[in-house]
Image (cartoon, rainbow, N blue to C red; front, top):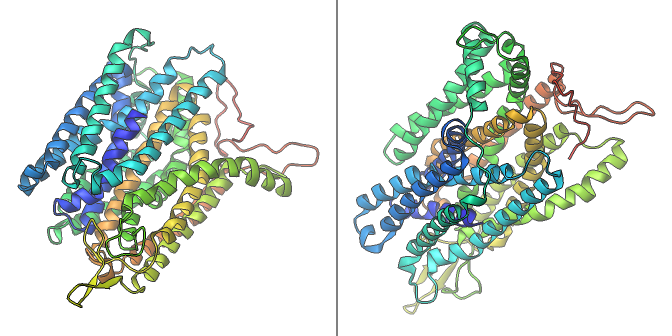
Length: 571
């Protein structure tokens, strides 16, 4: 929970603080998405270093230490006396938030979960491990809820004796204290922990095998090329985000990034459908890899197309900063007077995780059983994801429609003491607010939360069950990598539509971006259906009379693993 409070405490400030530092609407959104992308990508690096070199405990301490330095820098950058020198504040903040916090904070989150799992022996009852993950999820959600309930107001208005000018400073100081508390707790209780020593990283093994096969096999070459294109887009997008407000340079780089990501996704989808190219892989000594390793890596390759399609889903899911931009030009007032207290824009984001907490049991105990009753089979993971994609399309289209409605609604005004009509402005960017209540934007959060439940649970389930235990970390890392690429692609899209996203949205057409994303997601869904049907991936056919419906766990290229594990149960 400490990590969630610290991490999300920073995250919810980024959109507005980047604007305060001089970035435009599009630039601040792109910078926030770049932070998200870098954070997710850092999880993979942290996992690799922990497995191959340091071990999880030392990596946790290292990450927390660097994160604490990052918090110190952003805290200094937010001091009113430093903010007077905008360039100095920019430099300190960007170094602290990107190199200090982004590269370490989310990696800490991922490692805390896996480190906790290491404390259970293989002989431990499954219920104990499940209980730990449930408690971890509950604590995580509690941390997110507390963050959205407290920090946005503290950031904008201050609290008690803390003035508004020190709102950001206070939030960053709390984050620093929480990270330092994590370090103290780890050090003071280290004797209680089971420290699994670093071994040869499973991720490293996968990379070595695929790279070795790429010397001899065209399919492997194309998968490696796709990975290189993803990484190139990731690096170029960071440059584009920093240049987003400097003429056409950042805009042109964004075009290149978009092309690279789409090309990489196509390569992964097309060339990873048949993983047989992994057969015959040899090590540096020319000796063929162990057969179990080969079969496991083939399973990892087999889920690449499924993961690649999720790149476009993450574009839809990671809309927090963009949605906040819209909400901050709705009527945020609590009351009707011109100077009434306003709800901070980030607070409304609570309805995404908040809705999810209610939707998970609704689907598990009502919707899925009802579907099984009338369809004669339980919903497959493929079917759930397709349904989630459709809901995501609706969510993006509706958000675009909502923006049209908001922009065409009259602007809030009042008559001042001199008898002149004035706009009622929001407290953050000082843009005019439209006469449409903030709560009318809640449906877009609920729709995205619904899509998240439909897509993410099956995705995690596939990543966990479709590969051997030794490669599950690799599978989860691939999911994080795709999340990072989705954030990168969304950052690119924001920059491409930048001319339609002015400081005052009433002068632009922000809805164009949402409609474009909806169209992109629709195309993605069509090809997802075609490819998954071709592969027969994660589907449940109608059962024959007297038989039980079972899901195709992988595809027509499914490999029979050494343990003969065929997953019959669908979560």
